[in-house]
Length: 378
Image (cartoon, rainbow, N blue to C red; front, side, top):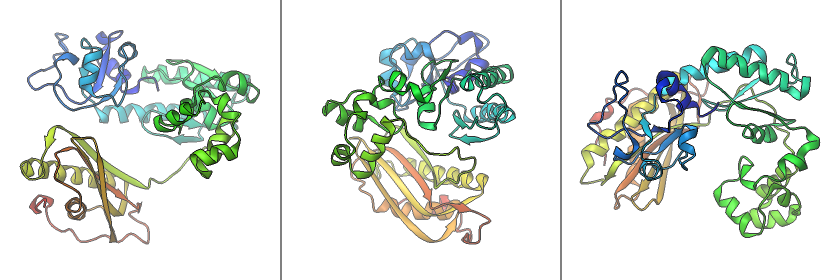
């Protein structure tokens, strides 16, 4: 989906179309929003520690992108309008566009709120013009029923289809045939391969490898020496456009988590009450997520990011599976006590891993342990 969160907001506020709009964080205290008077908070007025969730394409032209600090985005585009996230609305539109796709091509792999892989193999018109006919039908139907646009890449496998979906954003369809690897894929930067992040890309740049085509000329053994046997072999396969992964219609999550970045850095002792309230809220919301999706887990962990941006994690595995907020709160609190707490905290997160279905034979619920609020933080 094209700038999904922002596009949903533009349906709500069509008067903002064509303007730089940023979604994320919150707005400054005291600044309201009156849609009838078209008064919206501006990025230049934001004070806080939030990050950009997404931005409209006019905002992206100023260099604003997702995961960027909002204060930094305000330096790049102070005139941009800032709107908070509305996950309930985004999930509603997510269900709608996926239901549209299912009518045309029911073999779908869900990749999050705004992205899917689709197997065209057995679908009507799935092979016509390399899949373009079906892609255009899906694209038109999504727009007709939701008002949103999407970009579709069609290719022999998921690896190349993912790259192709970025070729003609927004509202584009791109087809890549197997014979077009050298022409359309090899000139791209290595970072366009889904899975090659900033660190690996920087290492490749340092080794004189800038494009996927240059990566393809590297010997598998040489890549293994520099990036490890598994990762090096994977990079070699990707450079040659090889990907045997099937479209998986059902998959089970291995973990769920909740985290928050504080408006100001909090100290474990001096800000104990505020930190404790946030911590308990994270545990309760995570428990609600587990219960809503009918999962239980037994490995509880915490994630901390300090004022110097260093990160620390701690976890423990229980003897039972749970989705009880009190059990999660108690175990996460024990993990927190084992983490370094001398520095102020910028971010705090809670995770439950080792998930199984709550009705599975191995799932055993722990009796409710009492209100999480009653437990001390340290």
